Picture 1 (cartoon, rainbow, N blue to C red):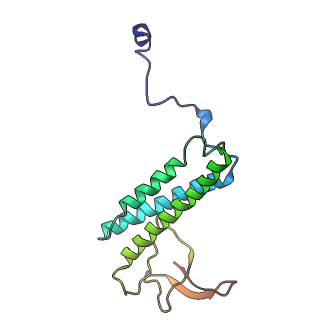
Picture 2 (cartoon, rainbow, N blue to C red; picture 1 turned 180 degrees about the vertical axis):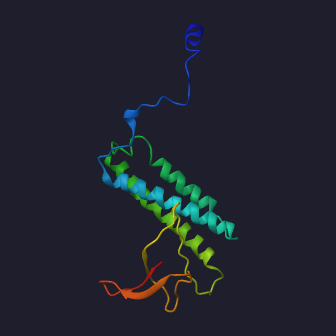
Length: 172
């Protein structure tokens, strides 16, 4: 062993061995890949908005988010993402990804309620969690009558979608 160590003493060692042929993960189960990615995005949104809410005096659901992250990471096991697990594991993973998204969405809803202000106050919070300014039109479902954007330069109108639902359409 000493001879091997001495021969390798000049070799650079940085983390684990990297093989560029292993970039990305292909899968035979599309629901796994989609579920994993949408769960990751949902948790990123939940973390961002929960921290923003906390900075404005709200709470941070650390236990709930930790449980969601653990469930997501459990389902990123090396046989699950490529879809090479048995059918039961694949089915459970798809259900777990949906559970992670639901947990993240609950955290997002809670954070947005915290950012909206005191209970009983009519407020609508629209947050951009992207790392660049967002422009263009947005359409919001379920906006109470009379609420409108306060952003300078924003224009809005109430429109009806193809199923007859009322939407508040706004653009900057």
